[in-house]
Image (cartoon, rainbow, N blue to C red; front, top):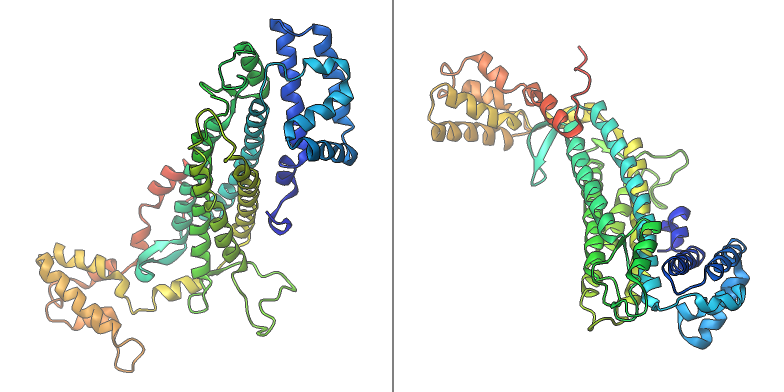
Length: 451
């Protein structure tokens, strides 16, 4: 991911320094386990740990350059690291990587990195959830128009709209927790996963120390269905980000103007049009969501490796693992900030709700006519006729509101009391179940409506 969309803490997880620290920790733990279960002298394991820890603590650009120099000759990244480590440790280095294969280090390290990244993503999701909850309670009773097919449908609460997004991100958090558990696996099983040269207890020991679970059958690699499921989860989260971003983009349209991204002092919207206030954050989030989702197909194609192992997955993961987690981390942080500062215009929402002359209450009027004894099919015909008469004459001098058309309709007048129509056309009637929905989503209804 380019620096523009990279936060330092997430980038540090994928930096070479962190990768090599994890590699050493895997090797040192395996050496200590082998000393415990036989095969490595205890003193050798102690030296490996002490000298290795010292080397990693002093790790610098010169060490990175030395590893790169060795890899340029060996054409093998793990061997290059082990050669550098041997230079730091000395003769006891012969007990490092004993009976292990490169994938034992690479795949276990990737698991650790993905767990580290996931913990950061979970914190990001918590920030999004916190922002959505606060704004949902703030606007619990803010009336707005609900839209289907982008057309005015019926009144709703803006807070309820946000509560729906909160519920989605809460589900996404649960999905990510499950994905974390599935990806947190360790493989220290040797050349083709048979433990022919390494005691299975070594794998168990290393896994426990790293907070991982031993892989059931690792062949020579951890099976990539785990990674595919992980990236599918990231993609679902990205889609949730885009759904909310698109909502903000639509609400910020000039002809809607119900909500907009915070416009910072000194911010410029256009080099040519000084009046512009563009939804740049939500548009950016839509683009980032596309990038995160784009990693799904390569991750799925990585599942089908040849026999016990090939490395067709390696180049893919060197790209999608850092880019996917870095991109989603940035997007979630941006989304949380955007929703925290989102500028909301309740008066404009109410004006838009009332802009169609009351036809948005057609559904409730339909029910009122049916309750008054009119057959539903006839009631639908009557309501639609009056709604269309209102819709097609909106803004014209002879145009009438939906209520005026209903009052003038002989099939309605005298059959449905005025107070029934009043109740049917009261937008507040759509807020009656908010406590139920809020309690189900948030576990609490929140404070009662003021006044």
